[in-house]
Length: 625
Image (cartoon, rainbow, N blue to C red):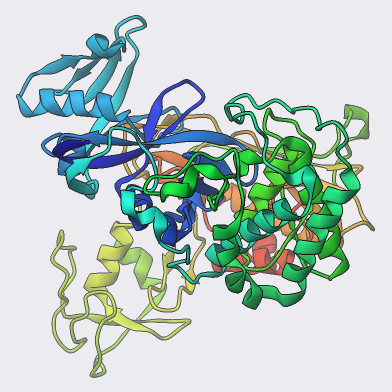
């Protein structure tokens, strides 16, 4: 034991052999469960601290992280750092990856960078810790010494990692407190997922008591990084193990959530000759008495039998199925272990049975050029756009005059643009337009009233394309256009049907926009913009309503309303091409992401979105004119 004060950082080992830190919030969550000892159950559900980590749990006894959807197992560790270092101050150093999002440095690298930053060094060479990079603090950039490639870096503040003081264990063992092992295991959290974790562990333990095939292996388990399937023990009978597992799981399936909590104490009565005595165990701990078993004590065949038995019992009892990946054994991880992991990590709070998940189908089967057809009633199969400049010659005042009626006696209410009374002068404080601030006008169609001063300012801050949109009810006056960068839109029929539309073929739309430089109508004129994920393939049913949607999408494309330049809600990248409030279906044969079929309301929804942009059947007549 060491007498010291330190901050605790929980880390996981990636495929490159680097220890990657969990965020401060997640580390606080793991540390809280670790300090609670076996009373907390020994499993950490990471989704409770960060919803993005919902597929993961950590088993503190084996010090491994499990992932539900792939069955991947990774080691974790509990590391200690100086409280005066970066993690002790909540400082996080990050670098910008190729997708435009930010990735934190390994903890030792971040500490080295922060130390140089605090000493006000102009730069720091990371070759001393094994990396061929230089961090330039003047430009906040990372330079590869070999390729000279540059990336942006940033320093941000986050929570401080958990602080510990007093006696610190040399190893990352669990429980964190030596005296905690004697406490009876009872879940501190009553959420359905934690109760399910405890109940399934109890079922595993109960199954191990009833059959010789579920006894722990005498040899230590192989490292999780490269597990090998051991041969079944001589004379073992699969039917006995299956029957024992089925018997214990039948009780669990029949009594539901109430039995889950009640079955938890079974953990403390399992005989495990292979498990070493835990910290703080009594004098008889090494003689085969009660000891907490780990999942590593079950070999591949045992886990398979348990998974199959539970699946059969639960299917028979009508329990909802939850898809779990990796059942085909495509990764080095035992398929049965992936299944057990799926059970432990189910957020439904109910027993689950293992099924193969539906596959993501983004694209249709290959289509030859001879099978592609043009769309009846629509000329050509491709349309391009260029930068269209706003019409010149008309001042904002002249544009607004077409849509407004003067109001001589303003009502006693607020202007919803400046929030000042309409009877008082406009409260707009920006560049002053050449119009009196106390004039008031009413929009002809919707009847909403504003200061003319405010409307002119709003128009000048927009696209200045000769159109106006009421800020209160969004009624559009004139023809609204957008700021979509130049690109190409292709459209044709392919001989495959979409799910839910088996009675017709499919319209495929292909958008292609290259990266470029922003124009005066964009957020950052003169700055380059990126175009990720192009060409983008989208799909419509080749029905009457599907063709109607396509015709209106062509109008939206010509008016530059399909895309815009902004910040991606998916990656957080700025100055990139993004969708512009008109939803498209980019998934051909499935609907796992919500952007596919079947979706009985999609065509009606997209027609409403187009109408909100001022594109209706009347727009088709306007385009012909």
